[in-house]
Every structure is written in structure tokens, then in C-alpha cells.
Image (cartoon, rainbow, N blue to C red):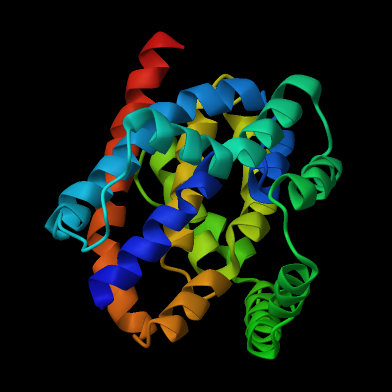
Amino acid sequence: MEEKTFVATYYRHIPESFLPTYPGILIGAELAGVALSAFLIGMLPVVCITITLGFIFYLRKIPKETGNPPGLTRSKDALILFQSLWQLLVIVLLVIFFQFPVYLTVLFIILPSIFIDRFKWDELKQMFYSAFEPKLIISTIVIMIFKDLIIESKVITIMPEIFNKLPLPSFLIYVLIIFFGSLVSGQQAINVVVLPMAFAVESGEGIPLFILLMTCGYCAMQLSPTHICLAIIADYFKVSMGSLVKKTLPIILVLLFIVCLYYLLLRLFI
């Protein structure tokens, strides 16, 4: 069950590392002054590596025989996949190429989806009610209070001072600050503190540094107690947060090491 919980949360969160439909990406790009389109392209190798690591560590161990009937044909399976993903594809295109605000883009997609996917009124009511589930709301409030307590304790402002004293290359110092800052306070909170400083000091870094720091923040959020999704999925599968973190930590450390090498490689060519 622990492996099942890990796979469910790990693959569900990969889009949050690069898609411009998430506030963290949009805010980070604005703070760093980088183009979303360049970031999206630069993140493609990282996304492929992330997917591959999940397969190597856990997914390949899952039995191929699921007990479900196989698909009809590859073309029909591809059509079903497109029908499931077309909303996401349209959102990405509108945000990147037409600079639509995310909230307008999502609203633009939700309304036609109701008719295209033929949702019934009972289904819409159920989705609306589930969005305001008491346990979800209470968990979110408690986690946000915890995050605010961490911020008010000045931990994220003290961190840069501590790590700057270490005899490390500047990019590794930023990696440590972003990773541990995201771990205790959430990625958006630490981004607001660190990204303007990082890109003011390292003015020539651009996309390579932004990819590195955003991926570090993403990695930390897969272990962070401030990440509401982890608490929800651990409760759903009836496993402890500790066991989920234990399964996640090795793959996150490998991903961090690889993305640091990727950063150094990008610096040679960009």
C-alpha cells in the first residue's frame, strides 16, 4: 500500500513542476523575469527524468496483468487519452502563446467541458460538494496556520544568512535555501524571498538557474508537511506521512543530483 500511495502522489504532482497553469510557476517566472515558453522547453528533459525515475524505483515492480481488459486499438486508446487531456492542452496553449490569465483560461475551459463531457446535474452537485469537504477544508486551514507560524518565526529570512556562510558554489547555496525553505514554509513563500535576490546577484544565469531552483522547490514540496495533498493522500490510503516520506526521499535525492548536473550542462550552452 505504501508503494501504491507513493505512485499515486508522485505521478499526480509531476505537472506542477513545469506547467504554467500553476500559480507557483507563474509567480516564480514573474519574480525571476524569465519567459514561460523557454522554461517549459527547458524543463522537458527534467520531466522525462522524473517520470523515468518513478518507473525505475517503483512503477516497474507493478504486475503487468491488471485483470482489466486490454484496449481496443492504439488509435482508439490515443483518442481516449486526448479526450482526457484536451482541457489541459488548451490551457497550456492559451497561457503560453496568448498570455491569457490563468483564472480566465480555466473558466473558459470549465464551461464548455460541462457540455462536451455531458456532465449531469447530479454529477456537478457531487463535484461541488466534494470540493468543500469538511476534512479537506480543516486540513488546509491547519496546514496554512502551520506555514504562517513558520514564516512569522523568521526561519525563511534567517536561512539565507546561515547558508551563505558555507564554503559552497553560489548555485548550491541557492539550492539549499530553496529546498529547506520550501520544506518548512512552502515553495511560494520561499520563492518570494529568494528568487529576486538570486537573480539580482546572478543576473546572467536566466533559464538554467530558474529551472534548477524551481525543480528544487518542487522536490521539497514532495516531502513537506505544508503540502496539503500529501496529508490527503496518506489519509486516503491509510498510511502514515512518515512512510510516504520514506518512500519518496531516495528518488527525490537522485532527482536533485541529476538536476544539478543538468544545470551545469545548460550553463555551458546558454
